[in-house]
Length: 251
Image 1 (cartoon, rainbow, N blue to C red):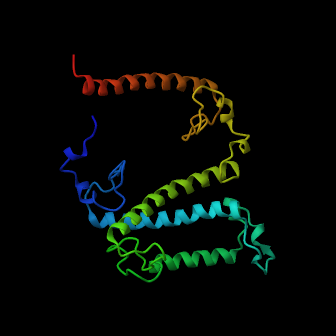
Image 2: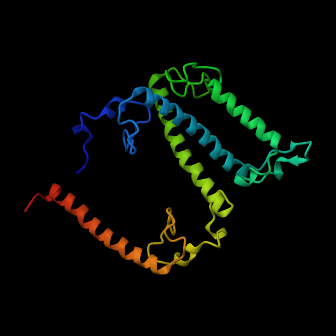
């Protein structure tokens, strides 16, 4: 019942359990089974992609946060168009304000990074050392193997968090007009009909990520609430039924 990983000795995932990113509390976590075939080449390709997306997401998350805290650069983003940095709104609203020439520069730089590995390093597509672009950042690069592994693990963990964070910011920005998802700004939501119901608790408030209640139908909400309570009670009993014999023994 406790899923003791030590008992599952034949798993092809054993090939990856000592890789970077295998961290507590999940260990090697692959809920979709992408690594179930044990293919090391595919694993390294996905690891390279994970690192790339994590780094981009960390930069993007900071790009959302920094202007909110520090403000904008002085001067002009586009002198020809008379467009100042302070004229560019934060978040998704900036997409329509950046001039076309600016987007061309962004796309060209992204293509350069994609085609060269960033610094023209690791010509095998980074498969021999995923994420290594040949740049040694000051104060972070080290020859100590244990410290390097610790920092690379931290990069993966922070990148994974940033991927979740930036998607959350995009969603909240699109929903409320603010990256911080101020619920008070989303006055037209049909979910307002249920924000005083039982189960609406901090820190998430009224949480309906799949959007079951977006139609505002009270009858359907009450039917689902009955089902939720029933399943919760059965699950609580089932959980105790698993745990109790392990602790107290059998009748």
